View 1 (cartoon, rainbow, N blue to C red):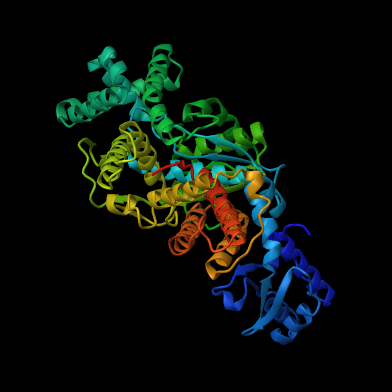
View 2: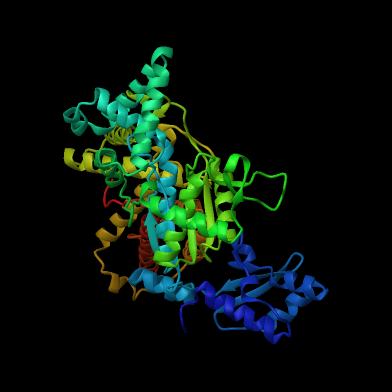
Length: 579
C-alpha cells in the first residue's frame, strides 16, 4: 500500500464519483480537515456540489458515492449534515506517511502534489530608491516577496528574483548638483547613504529661499537632462551614486538572508522604451493626448488613460515598467510575472498590465501582489530621516530586544556567544514572522512584546517548539532510518490531530502559492506547533507507557520537526538546536 497522500485520497473519491455515474472535474474536489475527530479525519462537499449540478438530493448523491468508496485504507465513512462525506482513515496507513516525511520530506512532497517543473515566474520585490536609506516601508515587499519566491521554488517553478531599483528621475539631477556644490567624496564613501541624504536635504532646504529656488531647481533639471542625453560626466556621477548606495543596501539584504538574481534599475531600461513607443504608435495602440502627450486609451471613456510619455517627451514609471515587462518576456519567457508592492501602487499596475496586454508585450499572467503597511506602536528609534524609520535600526533593535529577553529568561545553559548568536537569529526571525503571519493586505501594528513573545503566535514560540522537539530526539539517540521503521500507535486524539495536520502541509503550500499568501504557511506552522505543544506538555514521549507508544511518539515528533523546519525555510526563517 502506497502512502495515503491527500492526492491519493482525492483520486479515490473522484474514481468513486465517476463510478457512481457522475462527471466531476478534479479541481472541483476539495478535502478539508474536520473540526472534531468525532466527525472524521477529512471531509468533502463533493456530493453537495454534484447534487447542485444534477438537481438531486445531496444525501442521496453522497450515499451513491460512498457505496463505491469502500477501501482498506478507510476505517469508516459517514454522511453528515446536508450531504458532507466524512472519512475516517485507518491509522496503520498513516505510518507510511510519517515514515516518508521523516526520511525524505522532499520526496513525500513531490508525490503528494503536482509540481510545475516546466513553469517560470519572474518576481520583482523590495525595489528601493538609490541614494535613500532603506526604511521599514521596504520590509513588507522584501520579506513577503522572498517567501513567495521560496514557495514557488518548492512547487517546482523556476523563479527569477528581480529588484527593480529606483534610479531615475529629476531627484537624481538635484542630488548630482548638490554633490557638485557641497559634496565631500571621502565622507560619502565612508557613510554613503547618510551623506547623500544630507546633501539631498540640503538642496531642498536651500531651495526654500525664494532667491535661490529657481536657480537650484533649474540646475537640478539641467543636470538630469545631461544624464538623459548621455553626458559622460553625469553618467559617471550617476554610476557612483548607485555604487555607493548598493554598498550600504546589500548588507541589509545579507542580514535578512534575501538574495536576488538580478538588480536592474530603471536606467537599465532607458534604451528599451522608445522602440515600444514607436511600435505602439505604429499599431495605433498609443495615440496623442493633450498637448502632444502619448497615451493608451482605456475602454471606459470616462476613466484615466495610460500616460506613457509626457508632453515634454519625458518617460514615466509606467513607460519603464512596460520596458521591464518586455525585457522579462524576451529574456525568460515566463508563465507568471509578479510585482510585490504597497497597496498604493494598485492602480498604477492595473494600468501597466492593461497597457502591456494592449501592446502585446507578453503572454504571461501579470499579478500585482499588494501589501499593507507596518505601523510601530512602541518602537522608539534613535535616528529618523523625516518620517522614515530606518530598516537597519529596526533589525538592530530586534536583536537587542531578543538578547534582553533571552537573558531575562535565565539562559544559564548558554554561553555569551551562544546567547548572542541566538539573539541574532531570533531577532531577524521575529521581524520576518511579524511581517509574514498576518494577511499580507492588512496593516501591521508592531510591538516588541507581541513580536518576541515566547508564548504567543510568534517566531520565538515556533523556534522553541522545534528546539524542544529536537531535544527529545537527541536524548533518544536515534537515526532517521531507525525512526522510519517505527509504527504508529495513536492512543490520543491529539496524536491523530497531529498526523492529520502533517498531511495537510502540501495543500497549505499550494494554496499559499495560488493566493500569494505566505501567512497561510505561517498560520499552519503555528497551529501545528500549538497542537504539538499541547501533546508534549501533557504526555510523556521517552517515558511512555509502552515501547510501541514511545516509538510511535518519537516518529510523530520527528515528522513535526521535518515539517516545521521546511516551513521555516519557506518563510526565510532559521531554526535553532537549543533555546
